[in-house]
Length: 411
Length: 156
Image (cartoon, rainbow over all chains, first blue to last red):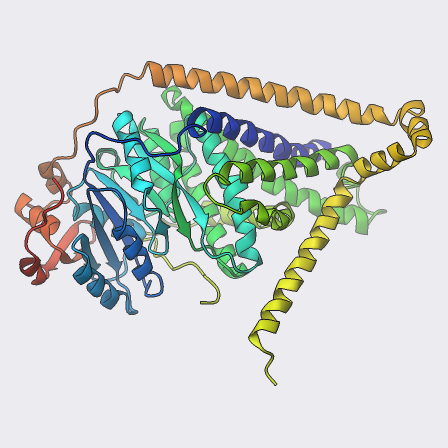
């Protein structure tokens, strides 16, 4: 029990340092002195794919923003994946207003992966930028992303830096801290380590050659972005993270919406980890080992944390009956607690410092950051604990991963 | 009587601030040993008595040494890994030529359609498609507005 307790306390502590060190390395090597996108001799043609399903509330703003991109050579392919609301009518109007806009309508709802496939087939471009229907892409995002493909022949995908658009409510404010201090730092660190756990499906640019060699997006996974990230990297392609390519996304504002989203992410992670496990023994795939190891350690931490809390409660409630060997006397160790609390705060400050270059007044959200370790870790742990048996004991593969729009709370 | 919207929003915000303040208090509880240390420092006599004479500092020093060594080790490992990664896959990258773009015939073969059909799909501004049971793209129709808008001027 002592070993489990130590793991529960020390794993987040050392991982926090790991992410901080990695992201600071990244910042000083790749971000600090580059504030304007590189000028290219030619700008290859890019298709922006926007899969959507019942997005009448957001699709207009998304497409209008895409149409104002500063990248000179692109078209926009909106894939209406069997919408039943007014999405089709809004798209018709948008296409009549913008010559760059094309519409692909699917006869029925096939899911995001298949919608992206349809969009890819309808495009002539070698570079495919995928944007969620509720995301507002920064006007210069493509200018930051495309140079990575031209400078790196091995680059299959470039993932951007999503920022939180809806800042109302506590849950949304907590997620601002998460996107800065966790997601951004993790991606920066993983980029320097050489492999990225997942692209952000909300806005990511792909090289078609890489997608073509690996079979495009799979409809048999819950999260097509995690699956395609692993598949590309397993085929020796690289994924890069570009923190200056911004988009503004809508995050869940209700607990149930957040739970559903995180459960889906957790299931996607375990699906990929199990699916690609047999390939991990191959020495040639050793660059994926750190990501793979980190994933399983994280999953093990979730169970260890739950076990520690349960055993602590039993120790507290049944002091006479509970065996000493399984006793957890305290969940708040003395000096370790100090260091853990200080490290947590330091991680937030570093994350907010790195991302404050792209979003002003970010430090104002530091007050809400305290929720992250208190509640958010618990949510992520619980979703992982629930997701793993769901995926492991699932009877058969689901064919088309249908999607539903995120719970955005009040309009 | 229904409460005005602004007061409900204000109440909600106030509740959120209060609960968050509670969590900050919990965070402060975590660093209580450090606060105690600072308070002992304020009264130097007690500080010397508790921390130096009774050796209260030893636990902290031991833990900090432990953390410091691990963090230093991590720093070294990350630095070495990043350098090796850059040298092995950056400077000695064998794949330096840009991969050839996917040709229309490759794509047509992949989706099991003729090149003419693929061109029709890729030229249309309004398109209606479906997938068969083998996940192959099936073209339903291209909208009449293709002809009105004419061929695309952008793209390769």
